Length: 354
Image (cartoon, rainbow, N blue to C red):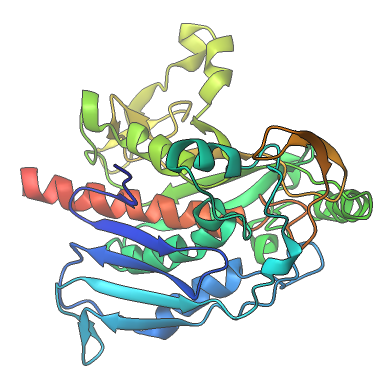
């Protein structure tokens, strides 16, 4: 059977297809009494929505969210919260129903279910992530002590200069980039890829600060394991690192050790954060750092070899409106998944440890 949700105590599931009537999310396990309005959610959806710049899909979706249940007089009731976002700008005629798109999920959906929704990818479309962002906005209400920030650190193989990192710049350019010079280079790279009918990949980094020590669980419900699962569930994601990730394998033990001293307030103070804020599956109190790799968008105008459902070899050019780099709009989605995991872990911790 298929499962379309995530979480243990704070749970959410998404529904809908890219070219269906609407998409949405159902959030369950949210504590009662939290102030929640559609405006609270909309601010996050506006950061993710398509058509905001020439560097993203030109599909014109306002992504206006409606709350159908789970609130009364502006506060959560503890019952399931149903969220809906109408699709208003589908162009199914842009897609070819016969041939499979290489790199896309339409072949494997057909192999599994015996049918496929060829209209923009159906459930495998990045359109589904709008529902995650809506659910993530609700999750943030559960963790007011935690600040979450995601930004793009690499695009098309071109990385930012960490020495030029400026948090204030992240929301001032269409790339969610903290390095002004890198953002200028990326504009040229994305324009060139789009004009060539191609696409680029990207790496998004996400940092959560304010998570206290002790959230998470050992072995089978590790905080970093839950984060990895959540991030890998995002369409187009092909890799996840926590902390130094693969870079840790190139360090010696004494280099990788996050040494500790007693801080001014008597609490432990770490001298580094190679572990990314998680040790043994449990938060250390340091910032939680995750990096997520997005592949190049599969739907491109460059002809690529493929086969059709009858097994005949052919070529395909995918028309329609697609992100030349899907990772750009991935930053708000990664933030949402971080919020959903951390909120769930907070409630799990409270349930076990009080």
